[in-house]
Image 1 (cartoon, rainbow, N blue to C red):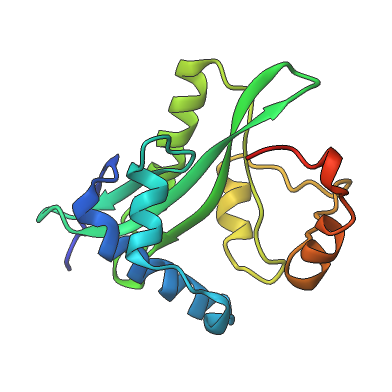
Image 2: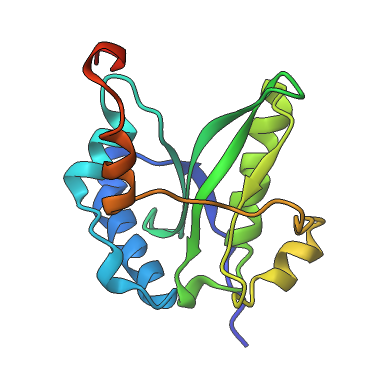
Length: 172
């Protein structure tokens, strides 16, 4: 019987970008929306390593330092708590690395960042059919039912933005 070696978690490095982009596309395939994923290595590199990054990432790596999973996240802010938190945008572990503890270690790393920095929350969203719900419940995560996500994108986003008149439009 082969025992899986627990992965190591570390911050993403520029050299990890191609592997993370590939895994984002694998995640989009898993979530039944591959046509919606347009992320490129150039976009992710700029977001993670540009002059003022607002996106952060950690990778789970195997014993050869090859990424087998990732967590991409950014800061949010609770006006009620008066404190930052982390919003986990995506968490993914390649099928061959599932069961090694990679997902739990990635989440534990983000929880540790929250605790050390005084952040009050670690939050994420998932599709209602995702079997990871059992995993999240097992680590103590609570499903929020009173908050319903909303999104503006595409034509609706452009249409609403067009309602801003020139004198009130903020400078970039």
